[in-house]
Image (cartoon, rainbow, N blue to C red):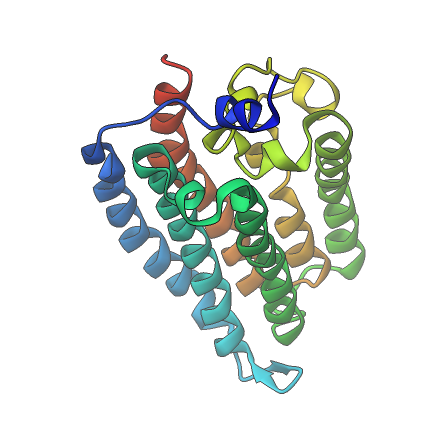
Amino acid sequence: MNPLSAKKQDTLQVRANPAFFFKRQFQHLLLVLVLVPGAWVLAIPNLDGGAFLGISDRTWLILCLATAVVHQVIGWLVFRGQLCFAIFTRWFGEKDLTVWGIIFLPFLAARPLALIGLAVADGGSLGWPRWLGMGLGLLLLMPTLYTGWSIRKYFGLDRALGADHFRERYRHMGLVTQGIFAWSDNAMYMFAFFGLWAIALMANSRAALAIALFQHAYIWVHMFCTEEPDIQVLYQK
């Protein structure tokens, strides 16, 4: 087969109606307007002016909230832009998925890094014995690490980035049922975010624990408001 023809055939063939771009995003907005103030109310009373790397605990809290929201809003814009208008493919051609990875991965890394900053700045506020926080944190870290290993070995980074929004061949790959995915087909949302809880517990930080709760809840908002409708279009369910 001609290489150019093969590339064209691998370009995502599914297209959604432009109105689909905003499907469930009103619910997304409403849930953000509930979850962000809720996380703030839970976290802010525990902050006492601590700092890490010269940055105040309150600023770390704002960074944690802003990074998560911006990350997931960008995810909505890019995924729906692809499904409705193939916008990244039009702009970047065969480099579309690479460009998306360059945008996505720094935000993914920033979420735990900002939480570490908050956890250190607010360390000890939970008031638990150190051995208890460390022990529970290490227990929760285990499924997170296993999830990362399973993604690398069985799932692949491209699929984790949402490659089925960019390439036709990914729509025809079967469900992964090995590793952590034997326990849940939503393992990345179910187990990977336990790592945020682990950070909060090991630092004994009440504010970081509030943000871990927020981030774990908010990733399911992404699943309900963006991923689930997209799956219905991509896989015609």
